[in-house]
Image (cartoon, rainbow, N blue to C red; front, side):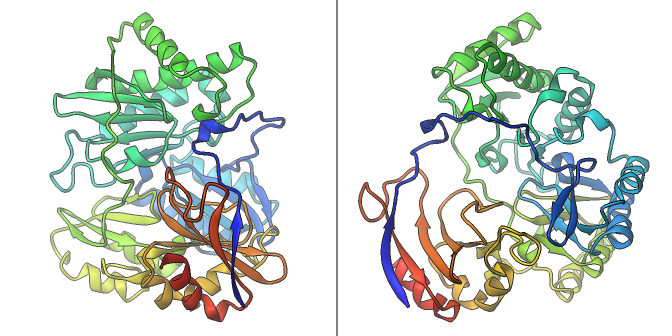
Length: 436
């Protein structure tokens, strides 16, 4: 049965509700495994999503020997290994260490850096961000203070095209046409202009200053937008830190251009952009990607892979990858469908949302907004921006709601009109109703 109902409106911004963390950050890592229903889970941080082919092979080998064999991409361009044996921690750590994926065990959960995945490959953007990425990761791993960052704290390095600048990172750096960069802090209304050469140091200082301000206020928070301080206080504190380190800065309105959209599937410049349905890569698909790549893979925050290609065989690569189930067609409905892991991997999930997402692929592909399936109200991994939330609720039903961040709800200020669905076979009808 399909019925309309309303739900309370969400806060207008991340800062609308005070946050106080009464426990430590339990975000999983490569050394701190998480117990899931399908076995232990490891989250391997891959700064900028960049993997050498040797590292890619090491991850595939670890998944085959210790886990379910597949590689699971996250919304931050990292990799999760699932179905791991509970006793494999030491063996996994050794394998990752040998491959260069654990440069600092004390920092392995805080190396959360996203970067424009096509930087240097398609002729766009104001600056190649790879030097920033390497320098920031090195400085992060050398900082004793940075060990205190939450595993959820995020850096974004944008080459000026505005792709990862829209991901809501805690520290965002966006290249500008004059050779400099804008340094933004969460959703703050002002950014700091800095020299392009100072970006890695400035980004790290911003994160360290966040920790210092949080301590001064006695705040147990994980993200910049959770910090209970007046607007501008953190920005001013960061500016003072930069000045003390000899880094010049000036205030400027942030550049809100860009919509946090990844590269469309297909050949783009000297690379091939590939979308991974539901973020799950089989051994065959991973092998096909590495065979097509020239030197490295770049995992994206949109559960895709950018493959720098060799000149020979590049024209045939899209068809070969498509034959394995990967998406190289920009018109594929898979680009409009996402889901959390659901059952049987997650104990909190009320449904096998991935199976239902695949069964309703055609209907979702024709919807006005992208569709994201969640097994519970936590909505793990959900994308930013406008979407249809499909959430499993007790009793085997789904609740559907149109989400448009930053705008008034569809119904009125008291809540959004949603659809309640008892039978998943009626999803096409529900999607039509919720987007009409």
